[in-house]
Amino acid sequence: MGLRSCSTLSCTLKGRGYADQKANMLCWGFGQTINGDPKWNHLDHYLADGSYFGDAFSAQNYLWWNGVVPPCR
Image 1 (spheres, rainbow, N blue to C red):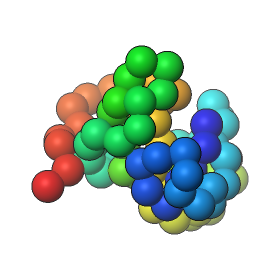
Image 2 (cartoon, rainbow, N blue to C red; image 1 turned 120 degrees about the vertical axis):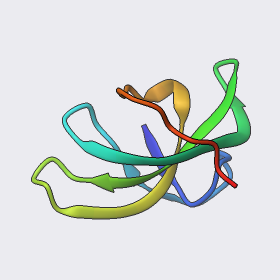
Image 3 (tube, one colour; image 1 turned 45 degrees about the vertical axis):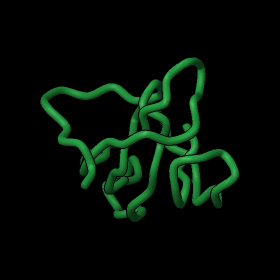
Image 4 (tube, rainbow, N blue to C red; image 1 turned 30 degrees about the vertical axis):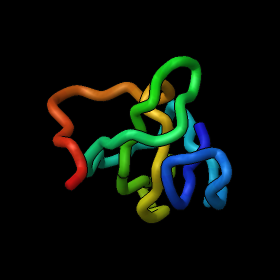
């Protein structure tokens, strides 16, 4: 999954996330539609070794999570 500076594919690609990495979902909002889904998540992303990557946006259909993520304000 792409980790971007905002919620469209034209935004800067800050890095890539993989299944063995964890993120804190901060909130979700609407952005560019990807595979029929316009929702994106703003998240704090961590690398597989537990080190902090930074905050980024990722299209929601590439993420798996437990719990409730609030809408962005």
